[in-house]
Image (cartoon, rainbow, N blue to C red; front, side, top):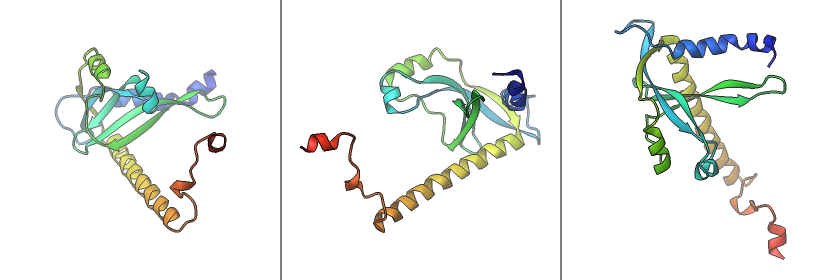
Length: 166
């Protein structure tokens, strides 16, 4: 990554560093309590079944029941990998499989941190938007199928089905 590109993304990195820094004890009007914890993030069921995934620092906002993940994703050519935030309503949950649960024991324990209130509000708003986007996707999917526009499940054919049908 070029130094110019790195400078362009410095505010993002500083913001992430600030939200992960423990603040003073006690409530203040401009911060909220969060729990920083380690979570195994996988890219799908196959990734999980084959031992893939990576441990990430995540945040849990207990007052809003919102989990915040920062993952690094490839961006447009020349930009390299950039941090992307995912936020959803949830809780701190142990991993689903035995191997990951054993690995969790080696991870640092959860810790209470304080994050800027405006950042926490943005995380909660992102979780709300994601819930709305997901619900709209299911609603529109059902409408497409019931109106017989597209999406009839019987019309979905796996790759190579023509060869198998002969």
